[in-house]
Image (cartoon, rainbow over the protein chains, first blue to last red):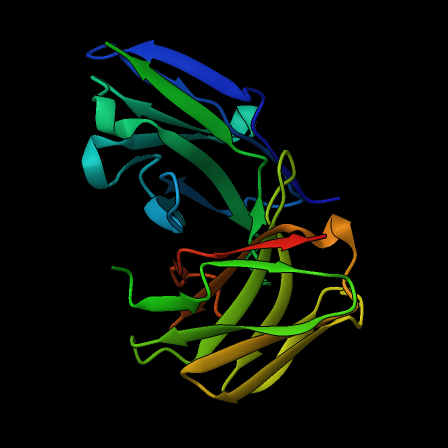
Length: 113
Length: 114
């Protein structure tokens, strides 16, 4: 079955430190991949997406993600975290023949001073 | 402001009540979606409408009844709900239902069923 897994439920980082959020997918063929962010009391906002081509994708708010086919992963990274980055992060995928997004359970990011 | 507005933001209802959630998008999109977000579970796709036609019903119980009178408005009618239906209901829209399109989400309607 197609699925998206985010192994980390909670992550805590210090402000200014680097961040990596993990995402693994299980699909027969390489899916389209997305990262969304949800701030408290808000809906989801797209950070970045991968369809094909360059495996390092740049997004908004200084985020980037790297697609690794061999590891079935699409990890999200940021070199220096800001307190405003505290939020819930969702990885999502959809097959190239379908459209319904499969979401992971999310990773909650806490940023400490 | 994402261009997708949901009302009400919070709703408390008893199991015998009938209520509706409303979603309106000002983006000129053709497709609209209802998602359910429960604690510790992935977002669940409930319904998809494309050009006002329902194209997806993800095995949702009949106590949830969607309505899409036009491409800008989407409703979710609720009746005889169960406490386990308490969740955040998110509306989203996209330019089409192709999988290359970005979903734009509303802020959600927080539903509590007593």
